[in-house]
Image (cartoon, rainbow, N blue to C red; front, side):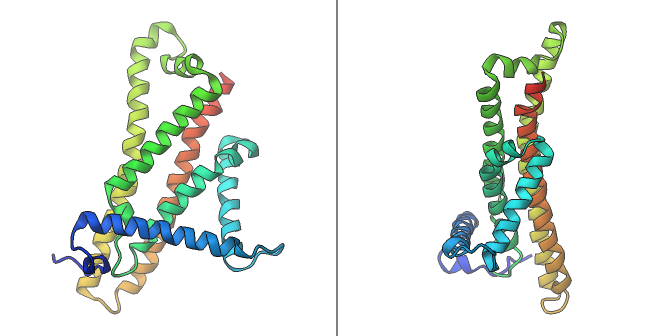
Length: 226
C-alpha cells in the first residue's frame, strides 16, 4: 500500500526524518500551549489555563490514589505529567492527515520506558538506600534468593518491553488502520475513525501514566512498608 502524504516530505522524504520532525513538532506544540496557558494567569481559570489545571488535577489524583499520599503524588507529578503530555500530543498528532505520530516509532516509546524504569529504581535507591532497596529483589527468604533474584531482574526488564511495545504497537496499529480507511473512503468513513483513534490516544496516555505511578509506588511505597 502506498504511503499517505506527509508534510515533512517537503523537507526530506524519509521515515526516520519524519519521526524526528514530528517529535520536535510535538515539543514545540507543548511549549506553545504551556506558554499561552500561563501567560495571563487568573484566579478563575479560563481557556487553556482551565484545561491545563484540569490535566494537572487529574494526574495528581491518579498519583494520590496509587501512591496513597498527596505529597508523593506532587513530588512525581512533573515527571508523569510531562511524559503524559508528550505521549498524548504524539498520539493525537498522528490522527491528523499529513502528520505522523512520533509514538508510532519504537525509538520514542523505548526512550520513555527507559526513563521511567531508570527513574523509579533511582528513587527506590535514594529513598530506601542501595542495600535495603535491592534486598527486596532477593525475596523474603535467603534460601529463595537464587530463584527470586533472576525473576525480579527479568520482571523489571520486562517493564521496559511492556511500556514501550504496548504504546508503540497500539499507536502503530491505529496509524495503519487510519491509512486503510483513508485509502478506501477518504471523505465519509474516516469521521468515526477519527473519534475512535482520538479516544484510543487518550486511553494509551492514561495507561502509560498509570503504570508509571504504579512502578514508582512499587519502589518508594512498598519498600517503606517492608
